[in-house]
Amino acid sequence: MTGMLPRDFSTVDRKARMKIESGGLPIRPAHERINDFDETIIRLDEDWAKMEALRCIHCPDPAPCYKACPAGNDISYAMWLIENGQFLESASVYRKTSSLPEVCGRICPQERLCEGACVRGKRGSFPVPTGVLEAFVTHYERRKQGVNIPVGKFTGKKVAIIGAGPAGLACAEQLVRNGHWVTLFDARPAPGGLLIYGIPNFKLPKKVVFDIWDDLLRAGVTFVGNTYIGPRITVDKLLSSGYHAVFLGVGTTVDADLDIPGKNLAGIYKATDFLVRANVDMDLLPHEMCSRPQVGKKVVVIGGGDTSSDCLRTALRLGAQEVTCLYRRGEEEMPGGYKDRKFAMEEGSRYHFLTQPVRFISDAGGHLAQIECVRTELGEPDKSGRRSFSIVEGSDFILDADTAILAIGYKPDPIISSTTPGIETHSNGLLLANDFTGATNRRGVFTGGDVVTGPHLVVTAMVAGRKAAVAIDRYLGW
Image (cartoon, rainbow, N blue to C red; front, side):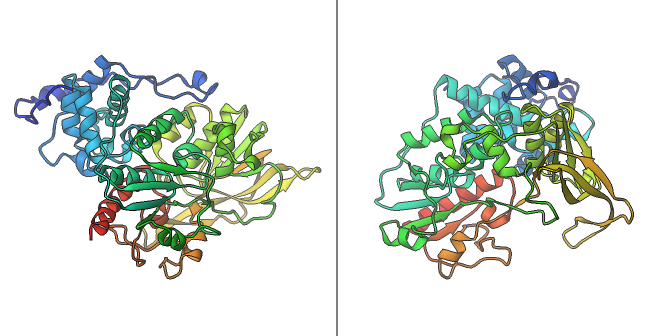
């Protein structure tokens, strides 16, 4: 890696740059990509990356993209390095503030974050594609020289991390840099959490996550899989067996239920079960999940988040002829990212907004055959700012469906709170923790990610893991 260019944008002609048009994202055509689980975006080349980065006008500090990035990535400087062909140097800029840049570059909803804040986009132009450029330079780095985590001098302190998802991986990466002995425990056979078991390959290839895990392995992090912390091995037992601190990064892994008649019919899946069995190699699955989901001709996905888009697109790749999403509010109220929804629509998914299922109807053999639905209408926003909805009287109608997938949200597994005496939780089961340190009310126990915030973004979970690692390091230094 050569020396970095100085961070000096005084010579940038912003007016001239605003006239540079984007070449667009190299997206695989929909009719091609629905036949496999390969990535949707074609691998980028160096000339394309430099030209797209050249469109950055390098807004005066602090740049809007920087302020919109939960990780605080210095995006403007990264673009400056990319346009000058310093791809390795750009990757190092991302790694200063992110433990998972190759992941976040692929799956963050950039349209709501960095790209959504881009001045170009606000002025009617295509924003600088900061996400794919982040993924490009970190992939380039891995190909050219690999990624090595610097390991600090061993402190003699041991940390147990429960949950090997984004928060846990980020926490481990930061702790091992400080010289602590780190062991990751997870109920699944492989590390990665939702990055492996929840996100399809067409968004995030499994190899990307396994490469990150290889980095951690070389740095000395230990993984203990197929280990469900709580029933037999508790947080207290870990603390009494030689671990000096514990980080809880267990996420929200329990699918929310739709409590309507017929919910237990054959042909109805919960999103996690469906996505795991459809997208994960059999050798990474527990024995009871080692079979692919069987989808019929007409698949209905219920829910409006990113998971629903993943389910829609997965069902198409499994051979469904008609795939429909039901959402009880309007498109503007959908919590899922627009980019994934756009891809799903391009691939043939249909959407019924302002629609609520009220009953699953079986055929003579006890298998799902139809879904009774009602129309809804939106009301005023509630205290959270989200618009309420009500059912339109007499609006009942029937949809034919032989497969339904429930993607209506997640809640925390209560096992940790029920087996860790004294740890404080909210009424919904989420853990209470300090916003800046991740410290719980239990001494030596820290937490972060979805188990604290509820279902949120990978990048915010990653940031929480990094913040907690700083606090844990400080705690272990007493």
